[in-house]
Image 1: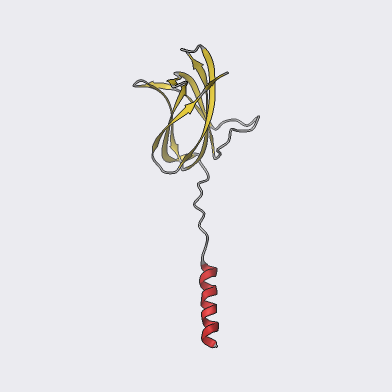
Image 2: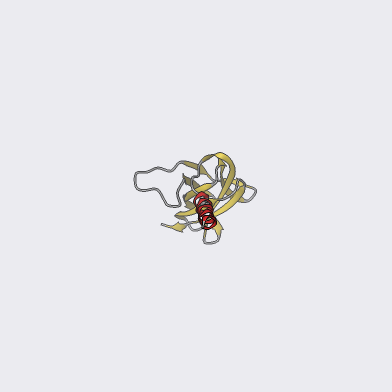
Length: 131
């Protein structure tokens, strides 16, 4: 009987000492070594006159009255219009592009959420739509 009680005690100790590990990615922002290169596109063509806004720590666009955390104009790198955000941590990001598409002669905008899961360089294409 003592051995059964001892086994039950050990089993409860083992189960009680187990901790659930939550591997969900949260956070996002400055302080890491990740690089996001953002390329806006519209109807399978690049948008070369565009501002990219980024919000840290969320997969959603900011609420009315809440501003974005950073922004950058796209610059031509080789033949690609790219806005680069450096020094980011693993985490959640929402990107918003707003600009002018010369070929269609229209204003364009669009957003995309992104999760950075490793400290590396990533290229993200943000789709835009006429408005």
